[in-house]
Amino acid sequence: MKKLLIAFLFLLLSLVSAPPGTSTVAPVPPDGNTPACTPAMMASIPACPLTGCGEGGDAFLNQAKNRTDAPSSASATTKTLAQIRAMSQPASWPTGTPRESIQGPGKEGSPVIVKAYLLKARAEGAESCNCGLTKRADTDIHLVLVSKLPDPDDQEAFDEAEEGSVTAEMTPRVRLNGHAFWVHKNINDFEGEYIRVTGRLMLDTKHLPPNRRLRRATNWEVHPITRFQVCQTTKTQCDSTTGAPNWKAF
Image (tube, rainbow, N blue to C red; front, side, top):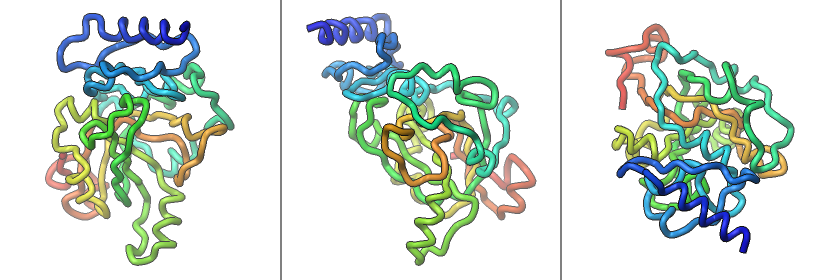
């Protein structure tokens, strides 16, 4: 009964004064875990609170994932994949832990620009940050970023490249904020291309012990992406400039 009451109060607060078409804001529950999803929360991405919902979800992590404020290019620091891979991360992370210790300049929330090859673009499934919604428009697109492309016909080399990859994520909330083109059927056309993403550093603590590890070099990500550009000429030319005609924004 107590859990149901907390979930009800959480939902009530999340729906108060939410302008149409915007994401609802809700307080983080006392234990940092997300409440059970309700039909109202799962009606759409704008109705889904920034803290998300669902059993086992981390409300603090979901808030970090669900940012939509785009950093300016001037405020963003250029990071290489090697620099992101070298960032330290905790040995473990209990669900619902406040995130102040991993936030700040050069840490989570910092705006970054990253150039890399897009090895793979994968459509994600249901996640607590998106209130368990499953339509492609309501889920993330997972980008596998690598420094060098492997032989496309060598599965072992492909797997090895992914083991050394850095993750970037396109989120449905950013997609609603002026990036309607960012759907999986379009983004996966850029697999193998040299790309440039702008977004914010985020540590996906969901994949730190005691939770499961995924195939990647680090749990530091560019999440969410707020700008996506594709090189139109050569890597050498694109590395020498930041704008047209070498780069095109999508």
